[in-house]
Every structure is written in structure tokens, then in C-alpha cells.
Length: 398
Ligand SMILES: Cc1cc2nc3c(=O)[nH]c(=O)nc-3n(C[C@H](O)[C@H](O)[C@H](O)COP(=O)(O)OP(=O)(O)OC[C@H]3O[C@@H](n4cnc5c(N)ncnc54)[C@H](O)[C@@H]3O)c2cc1C
Image 1 (cartoon, protein in one colour):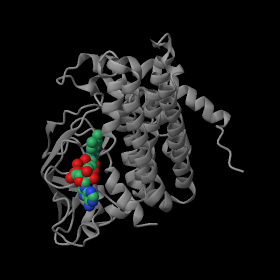
Image 2 (cartoon, helix red, strand yellow):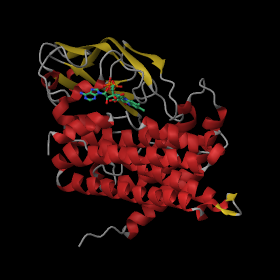
Image 3 (cartoon, protein in one colour):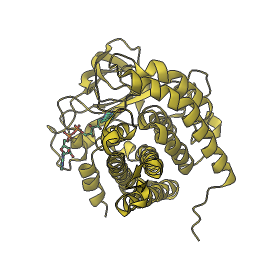
């Protein structure tokens, strides 16, 4: 029998995440959104949230206990991220999901020495913020999925070995999450520029204060107002060989071992889809038209039912991917996690659009949250690969 009910321990975790999201994250998000000022630095507002949430274990939930983690499962992280995503998708994805996933990545593929060094902060009061940089300004990030073995296709950032160091040169795009505010970067670079992309990508752990690393322009996005995205310029950055994660040329293969990134994004977007549904439901119960609440008009009621059904379907596809990540990580990484990400984002976009409609004219004003839901949901389309490219990837493994 398949049991979808949460254990008592999971219910406690869910309540803890919900309280944190609604009581501590929501007021900060309101300040950022209402300021409507592109000059403000959201990290200044979110840093204390990140520290507090990390203290509650939300970024180390899945790490082994011997490395300071909680030894919990992917589904537990999905439960937490749904709650945070219901309040703000950018905070869920940029701070909590990204850090949880990259820390996990380190425990899976780094040497013991690297694990100790990189994760030494896990239980500190000021845990490190990570960033993972692949995208570049003049290269289609979708090239990562290109099966053609042509060395001209794909990213150009290079890492050339010179004795005990690699010298990194290149520019990473302004979309990179936490680019400019992170304590350390996982930089994807090519160690053999003449070889095809999939044989030449390597991952380096680069501390933010290494000479030669500079931060360029920030992206101004239509939503995700609580997160920071910025360009990273690498100008002859010397990185010790001890900071190469895995072997040269293995990055593409290693990243396949991390379905949790997409699952975490998907869970955050289930949260957004749920929030849009609940917001529209509440409005529909109170808005009177033709003498009765609009929920009593079938045209509105059917929309609300679809929102609920689609949210539940998205949650189940995410939980299935999370469960598969424990039993069959390869299947999770190639099929179930990308499927969950693309489906949950599509549901979030649809629910947000419907919320805008149900709120009538108010749906397009700043007075309501519907516009925020729609902007934040739309950003999910291209964050961590687009709907089309993810589907093309899935098809290769069917
Ligand atoms: C909020 C956010 C956060 C991000 N964070 C990070 C980060 O932390 N680190 C990082 O490295 N990057 C990050 N990115 C970048 C992100 O990974 C890319 O934007 C995304 O993968 C799409 O790549 P692109 O923008 O280069 O679009 P392109 O690859 O140029 O694609 C443009 C369009 O063409 C379509 N397309 C391209 N190739 C094909 C094909 N073969 N078949 C069919 N359609 C195709 C795409 O679906 C898309 O619609 C982030 C992006 C966003 C929006």
C-alpha cells in the first residue's frame, strides 16, 4: 500500500516551516515588495532569515548527522520548501533550496577533506551562502542539453592547470543566483576547451574573496524581488587543485547525481500554486456579485476546483520524485525530478493566472498578491532550465 500521510515527525517539521514562513519571512517580503525600489539589496533583509532558517536545520536537513546535518530525506525538504514557497518562491529557491542542494552535492561527490572544509560552517551562527554558476551572457544555457559533440557549443569559461592551481577566466551571467552576495561559488568551467562540452566541464569551489573574482551587473527581474542575481567576472582567478570537485571533465555526470535541485524548486512552486489557490478561494468567498459570493457562480467555482486539483497533482508528482530520489537516484535525476519541476511550475503559472482573473480588476493591481504570484511563477519557467529543454532531456531516457 502507498501511504501519502505525513508521519508525526513530518507534521512537526511542516508546522515549524509554516510558522517560520508566515511569521518571519512574510513580513520581510512585504517590506521588500512594497518598497518597489530596485536599489535596495534584498540580501540585507534576508540574511537574518537565512541564518535563522539554517539554524532550524532547513539547509542541512538531508546532510548526514556526522557532518552536522539531520539525516532526513528528500521528502522532508520538499515539505519545508512548499511552506516557504507558499510565502515567497525566491526565498525558498535562492537561499534554502540552493544551499541545501549544494551542501548535499558536496557530501556526495567531494573528498572527505573537502567535505570537512566546505561544510565546516553547517552549525555556525553565520552559515555560508552558496552560489552555483554555469550560465554565461553570450551562450544559450540550454546548450548543456545538446547531444552534438561539437567543442564550439556551450560555455566558454576556461580553467587551465598551472602546477598546483587552475587559472579561471570568463564571465558568468547576471542571472546567477546569489552572484555577488555568496560566500563561495561552485563555478562550472571547461578544462579542455577543444573537447566537446560533456567531456570538458569541471566544477571548482571558489571562495568569494579569491583575487581576480569580481561582481558585475545585477539582474532586475519581473518578480523574485527577495533574491539577488548578478554577474561574476573571473579574471585570472587562481584556484588550488584541492578545490576541483570530482575529476576533470566530470561535471555534467556529477550534476546528474543531484535531482534534489529540481525537486526543491518544484516543491517551492507547489507552495506558490497552493498560495495562489488559497488567495483566490478566500476572495471568491467574500466578493459579492449578482447578490451572492462569486464562488457560487459556477464559472468561478470550476476554476477554483481546477486550481485545487492541479495543486494536489503537482504535490504528488513532487513527492513521487522525492521518494524516487532515495531509491533510484538515476531515474529521479533523468526523468522524475525534471518532470516534477516543469509540471509544478506550469501549475503555478496557471494558478497564478487564474487568481488574477478571479480577483477581477484588483488582480492586476499592487493591492492584491495575484500579480506577485504571476511574476514569481513565470520566473520558474526558465530557472534551472526551460520547460522545452527539460522535456527534451526526459525523452532521451524514456
Ligand atoms: C530566476 C533564475 C535563476 C537562475 N539561477 C541560475 C544560477 O544560479 N546559475 C546559473 O548558472 N544559471 C542560472 N539561471 C539561468 C538559467 O539556468 C537559464 O536562464 C535557463 O537555463 C535558460 O537558458 P537561457 O536563458 O540561456 O535560454 P536559452 O538557452 O537561450 O533558450 C532560449 C529559448 O529557446 C529555447 N530553446 C533553446 N534550445 C532549445 C532546443 N534545443 N530545443 C527547443 N527549444 C530550445 C528555450 O526553451 C527558451 O525558450 C537562472 C535563471 C533564472 C530565471
